[in-house]
Length: 304
Image (cartoon, rainbow, N blue to C red; front, side, top):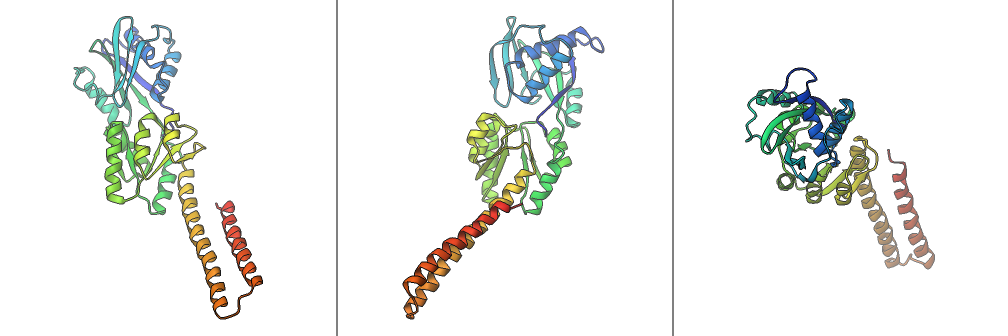
């Protein structure tokens, strides 16, 4: 996805109609906790809070703790506020909105449930747009003979929706960071080599576990960038199949250069054994081999 989600709906359990005070209060409370986070969902909440002018309704939360894979918690005016996914807070009674939340997720939206002192207050839904180049990039990977899989902490319905739009082969949803690592290990056992593309804090452990970790440089977090083996410095998914094609071309060039270098030296050795070798031939063979492998390697600068 584009990594720029937007709040599409928010509703309090005490909702009184469109643009009601309890719903605005819910958004303001959510922003109080989320405003210290760099997560894309937090940025979506911040943008919505500005639009509805509730960004100053509550003071910034204290003792804010990110609960990896589960949500974020903080203290607001003496209340312990927790914001998390449907899966993380499913055991908390939310009968008033359970059907609505499930329907939203089935339509590809991400739901955020809000609680205060373990009492359910309401929910927000957030949508992110699929990148325009995502389907093309996946198609190019398939052309290269590469199978694709999505590892996400999002709900299964949303993940399947995005996979259907992009052509991704397999989907593993509702994963915590450590579960992503486990899936990478499973895929390594199945395929032998696995490349992982990620951009978030939750992706860092899986990036480290993969055969090759690839970070989206423009959109990626510092943790992902530091963990990855390769960084795509432009926010462009088409660079991924390009990087794979370039790496394969580089390996072919290396093998060709080794063969050229050893072949010329072997030919000169045979010439020496048959009495045709001279000092000048040795110099020519050495310089010629160096020149050939250099020129062959320079071909990669024109790779497209």
